[in-house]
Image (cartoon, rainbow, N blue to C red; front, side, top):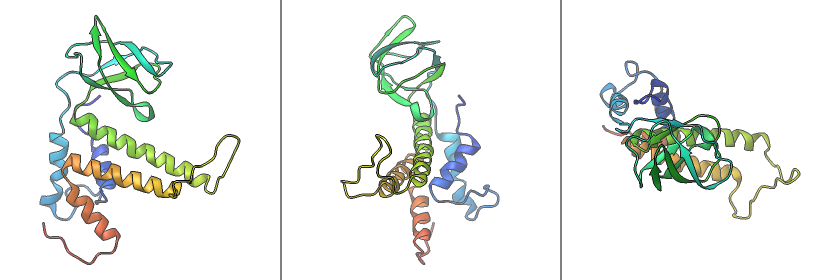
Length: 203
């Protein structure tokens, strides 16, 4: 796991905040868009080195994970387990030898990363949640209008369609990402342009 955001992750942040994905040398407002260089250089990882676990988690609930290293971990440490759709943040209940006790909400297999929560894991987690939302939107679009297939039935009793809920979730995640990176003003400017606002924001 790298300890800085990669260029591809920076591009994803730009896209999610409704900003241009041009490189800095081509983007307008060069002095303002240089904020992405600041984000890349100043979203820190934990001082505790990332490690791994190969302990299979086959049921949710309390479990003990054997780690390649427990250096820097203590009771109360928050750690990020795994990646993508099975990524979760758990709190270390105890450290004994080379093991930690945690309560898992998701299943894990193979060898997966274990990393102390940090600004870097928070930003990467939000990017992963947004990517997961893309998959959900594609699934929902391909089955639009689905009422029931075997045991699958969409719940629309809340009054909001699946599409509406996905849009609301994306807006929430984008807001959290923009706030975490200190660029809410860029997201708001992008939304204003998307709405066709004729106002000009002065930086």
